[in-house]
Length: 253
Figure (tube, one colour):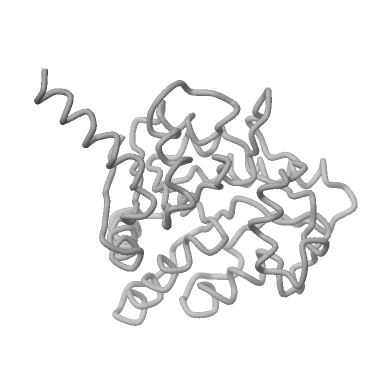
């Protein structure tokens, strides 16, 4: 596990974008696993700048992690709309090469199976993740068990509360979502987990250290051979405090 700590989220985003640029430029048919929410926005802004400077995404396939159940792609708070607003409309990725679950279909189980086939046929080269305050990745929420494949999940209260800032009220936030399971995340050749702000500091620390546990899904990343936590000072606060304490104890001893 690699941990990279930056002074602010923009600097962190430049680092993450450079990692993705390398994959895009050195892979014949690169597949990017993408996330939504406020955390990856600085990264997407930076990728747009890279595209304007000459980086092409014409040969790239993208696979998004999740979508709200019940929202059509045209809904302004759907993750289809999010990706158009923050990335897709500004780069030369082909629409047919972008993949996001459909949350507005009648047969949700069938959609999950379809999406698993998409992932099976497009192994992910680099997976971008955020982390919830409760340690969720994608919409894989804390539970007694964690599912490996694409599935429908009931969102935790903390997740609904955190996402309510994108809606007019908490009551408007969908309480279910389709999410990619943990298997394709762990099979990605490289994982970049981005976390910004002190609200994420405790979850980051618990994901980095301690036992792997279903009550904190991000802790499963400890078993991945190539994962990098990309943090700003706020998100790294608890980790840095613990490292300082360990260092002081070592010097005392």
